[in-house]
Image (tube, one colour):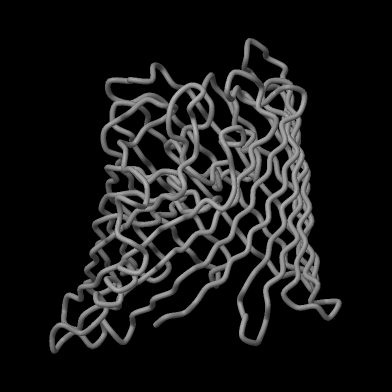
Length: 422
């Protein structure tokens, strides 16, 4: 479904603005606390496939996936009406236009792919509208509809032209200081390069509803967090996740730790067969002045790759990156990373990240000893003042090499400009 089958962007904007207008005498908070922004995202993506490892396009090896888009992301969030129970509404208007790209350069993830065989191509545009109603009682909130959900056990992917969204219902409660409780169910999944809403699935196998519950407790002056989560994609898989994070100032340094454990297996009718996946992971960081150093280790155990909903982000994994998540069966990976903030050299808003990740012992493609590595860099600048304040420019450069899979050299240029409307 392309944008021609959705509301035009201008109409989306008018609709969202109308939703935050007062409709009752108790709607003061609904309007006064409303926020409406229009994000302008210009995204250029170029992935060169090396060693004839690219997918087949029009009957031959694809040399590169290269596309360029302009996105418009309208994010309208009302406040809550006054009274014991407050009500509100959130609207996401998502629309992306192809600026460049042809049949031979599809599969960048920026745009959908339509057609079959040699007729596969990217449409000129696509988009969708996501609406969610919300209600709040004390410090407990219920949300029903579609939105950009980010949970440790289910992370929507926002790494391309438009963000992924999920349709469902969620309760979030913060009645006890330091303790946040979550529970809910998602029914549909709109991936980042798709305008449709599909059933939740894993590895192409559709399940029923995705049920989840969890909690996070912060203490020690918010320096320490303990989290526990459980989720089930009905008739496909179930997964539990335990996490511990800690931040500790030591003189001029701030030391950090992030430890986690996933345990997953089949569920119900086991439509994807018997599943077995465990992940042991940890990262340690040290920040001083404008420098941050980090090392991470991630180990998978079992016959199955990491369990996650199709299209969702692997961002909860400590070794998840731009080009790979290092989440194959039995894979063991380590990472070294350095971040620098150029404010220390009198250039506030300019940052540089470099990291190297190496994976081994991969059980895939008939092998039990496959390896892979990725080198990734990001140079980013955010304008600090003036008429273009908050406009950001990011250049991402990556190389990935694999014994089994695609070798690639990649460049991305991403320009974001958030316009505050209300």
